[in-house]
Image (cartoon, rainbow, N blue to C red; front, side, top):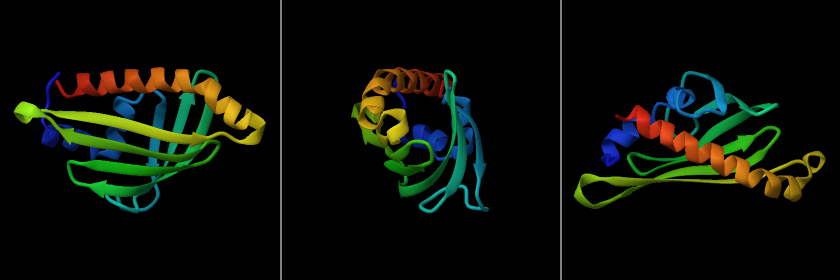
Length: 135
């Protein structure tokens, strides 16, 4: 579905609403009063199948209508970024990249490799849900 960057960003910027389209994000609790921008910190309860974790996340980059970066600290650590690219005819493309590290007891790099297709499936479905929310 074609959408412009302003409409997409208006949904992305509301971190608390990510639980409405991220099936794996069960709840978000902010740490402090800040709700957007670099330095915003929150705890996200995440569930994929039988696996549940609460990650502390902090927004590390924030460029209006362009990008939102985050660090993950918890069971799984790493970084992620949403990037909004302008397209033709007042449309845009959203990319979502994550680089995650699994602890040694979750098989470290082997666990990450095994989890990759599951996570890609979940994230692809999340983007479809986001698209549905924008209609």
